[in-house]
Image (cartoon, rainbow, N blue to C red; front, side, top):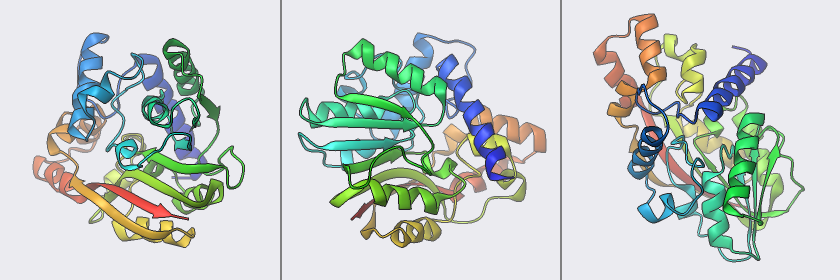
Length: 276
């Protein structure tokens, strides 16, 4: 798959999610509205968000798209400037805004216009004056050099074809002494070829994932120091088994049940930090 083909497919996939308010990683459901909201909240609880965080953001901001809770680990302080890569509907941005306070600032970057529109609408609903959303690719972050205290990201960098470029851009915009804190999906062993070459799996955060050691190496090569994994857990097999994207892949390519389990055991959610 060519990089531009991947970006186009990911942009289109997440545009549909923004319009429907439904997670690509959520179980199959024929309904919308409150049931989708409950589903997103259940997914978020499983990956580390507390009830207080889930109720502290505008309705519709949480689409259940993450694989960890970077805000909880970022040790954000009042008055800091935070940048969220792949901000979606604004969930982590609003949580970060609550931490940095009125003296702080939060910038969300997303390449999907529909997501930016939804996030801005959520910011208006929640009266978040210290949050702004910028349209742009995370390989070319629309922010000045040495301008933010922390960069956070939640299950988005795996979607970028050039992850090394993303981390170099993150290093560029972070102030000296600032930090990177991301949650993402990585691999402990290679995925089957049919999954690696699947656009559907890319949108579903699977085929874009790279080996864990390669991911950490990319962060270090960008210039970050003290790069370490703070936590890691296997991607819940029950989420994959009920995932709409995974179901499509399984049906299209006749993936056997034991292979599904093998794929799930290959995918790990990690929380990583680095410092500039």
